[in-house]
Length: 111
Image (cartoon, rainbow, N blue to C red; front, side, top):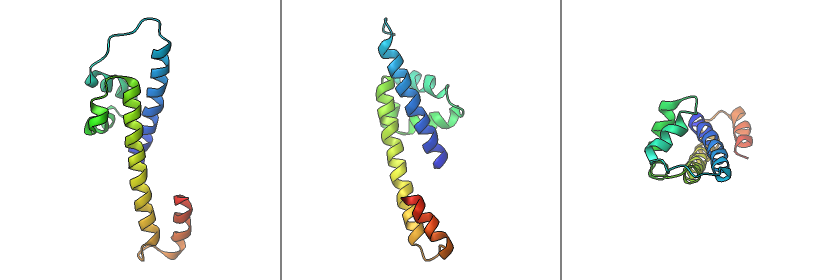
């Protein structure tokens, strides 16, 4: 999950840069189809198949029609993943199965 979260954060930064670049372009390019936008974006990542799988799996990212909408949707997806991870780490820190020596480092991770 951490790898997919890192990948999404990188995508968000990429989309932000692309949207800034496109905002400063003198001639507007034709709007790409959502699938072409995903392909174009994922082609810039280190793991094209994982990128496509993640972005196509979410209705907001899959239907984004421009880089800014895609960035917003990817950011929402990343924030949701972060919340889920935080809940899981919190549960791990409270679990009786977790070794006592690991509880404090896990709690520091949560903060």
